[in-house]
Image 1: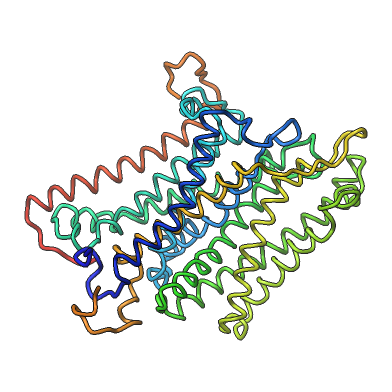
Image 2 (image 1 turned 60 degrees about the vertical axis):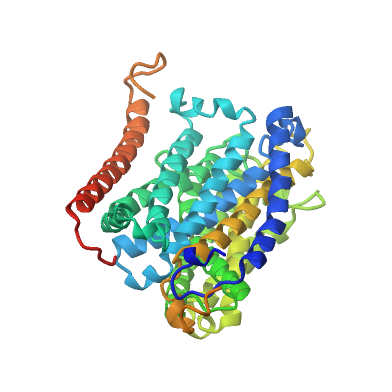
Length: 418
Length: 52
């Protein structure tokens, strides 16, 4: 039915099977869209936000997708600026994942502001003393970069590419992609950092506050570093899931090993910095503010020392070690464990820096405030996942996302294509 | 956002924030303009297709 749109020589499932899959995920998407409209039309009373929690569950999702979407800028930086040529075989997919993550982040922010018709105020009436203004600027601009990086892949669709103008446009965009990638890296450095900086400058929240360099707290650098470190893990994880679902090998092992190795070294260096930061915070910063470390991890039913150990050791030190050692990196099972732990680790870090901050009592009369999100928050948090699955399914079906696919899955041409 | 907005001030914060913002927008806009114009030129000239 749609065989004319499918990349030449590629084998895809039948259209009805594809449509059924999209319909099932589409139902979940519609559930999220319904919750989103409830938040827009009835207001933020649809959430369980209160005076303790100005950040709903979706703000954690927002920071998490931005962190895991960091694979796009970092892979682009390596490919176009540092000329790591092997990564050309996974850069399209990294860009698509980045596009999904950042469009999801912007959608979440559009829900979070509660009054999306006034979303443009953040640009028009910008508060130039706010790190979140910088985040909004950089997010919007970087989403434009990702769109620009995604366009050539769309223009390479079998039918679209037959139009001479689109063919030349794709070719020319590839030619100047290094400029866009460099701009993307510049923007990513600042918005990833500023998201961490927001936590680090909250001097009224001893759990979050950090010393730093000039106006930037250490969390600024740790957030950028962690996004560059764990983002490629997410790219590899989604590539692995796509390979499993399609039953095909889509990226050669040498490319996967290279990206895993780079990610492993980034994770290891990041986690060393994170451990140093945590020790300094626990032994110098907290006592200077009149607190003890135990204050942040005891006397409540959820946040214990386990969360710190899980984030730093199990989901930081372990994946870093597994990915830098050649034998474990090249073992598919151990590599998969490492990248899954890495993705969980960075999401857990964002959880701690968004939700645990809000839960910790600050005043002597305060108590721990654990947060239970409303179903509308959960639905709007799942919404980007459904959207991402649908977009990956459509792009994989109709666009030449994986340059090595045909070589790795040689089939008889023409008649095999469904 | 623009110097003609009532809250605009010629201070370091506005210059840094909006300098960076317009710098990024300028690069993206100029880059895309170049690509589109060159694609139109190549199409009109009938340049041969090449792989990227």
